[in-house]
Length: 263
Figure 1 (spheres, rainbow, N blue to C red):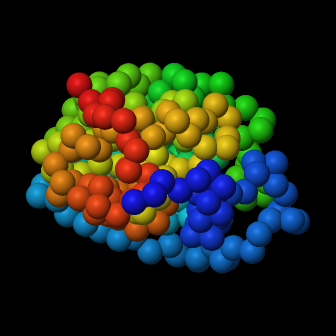
Figure 2 (figure 1 turned 45 degrees about the vertical axis):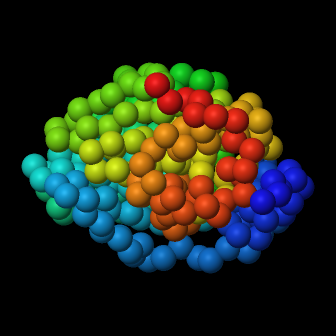
């Protein structure tokens, strides 16, 4: 299988997701996107005693995840928009929020963080290589993604760092490329991974942004080579997939060097 050129990659991703919007783009000249839903639907999937609640939020349709255990402890992954939707779900289901975990700091993944944090404080986890971008003035797209007010990062993430929040046991895999501090959040017992914008179904994240690197992203894909084939992938945009499917069909795995980023 031939690896797509960067030009082909950019064209392909534009057609599939509409995510290739310059960060300085204004609402007046933005590409047409579907209007926000009044009540975004939640998709609930159970993995043993763990539950993944998926919301598609905001103009760039980011997947925000609320992951909970049987004791109603939960973490929020990538609160990118619609803070009221996230907060209402936690309250209505009587969940106990233990952390906000960010796969990276682009506006569509963190714009609701400050509002959520103010209403419902919990430790915020983010890789330090995202610090220079997360709360800078360029990381906004008015009126859809206003500048996120700074919050304290209580958990600076490291590669292969493990956390136990209630009965939620997960490991951080640093996967630079889409951004310098991009991470994936791996639940080895349930064989699921949240890939942020590192890996999509049949595609990978953009590499034309601040401190992004196409070469680094290809190396980061090596992490997926070491995961069980049946591992389910929850990406930052679009539909779920599996490691087996991506290894067989995703053209970007053709020239992945080796099992880098795996302990």
